[in-house]
Image 1: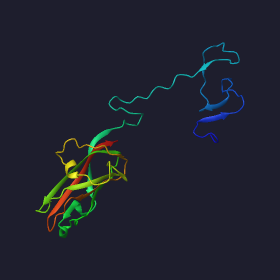
Image 2: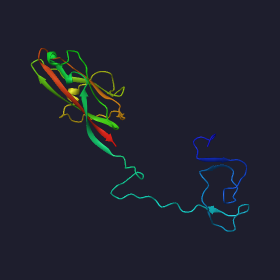
Image 3: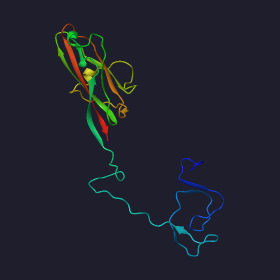
Length: 211
């Protein structure tokens, strides 16, 4: 009602009676007038002809046992542990062999993804393919969710070790990314291959996916 935001019903001035009951009311009445009410004490109390109670509520809506719901038409929240591939934004994730399309020395390559539902990263997986005698560098990185750095300090951490498939107890707890928020890994190498030597990496995230 105008003048009374965030409420349902209306403000009743003076001392009118509640519709259909004869009971005086003061101030605010929530909702629409109630259906006829049932008397409890025919004798009532001084000044009140009857003490009233509401009729029983309508029957509850139940869904089949095989289809639990939070409310009719709303399935319960589901949580899954799923992979999220991060795509290299430039150079196909390759350093070296610049004649073949690889990144030159000193380049930072960003691996990124935008989950379509809320996603919370719990682990990073990085796998590299190295070719040539000078391809000896390790991949190092910074992790961002949106614009938030997911580290305890600035700098590049050793993604080659933390992201190895055989690494033990290297789980993390990053911020939850809402749908459409970028998850980014900015990566480079500790040493860069020369000539036609190259290093190519793929990066993925494992995490909790809500739906």
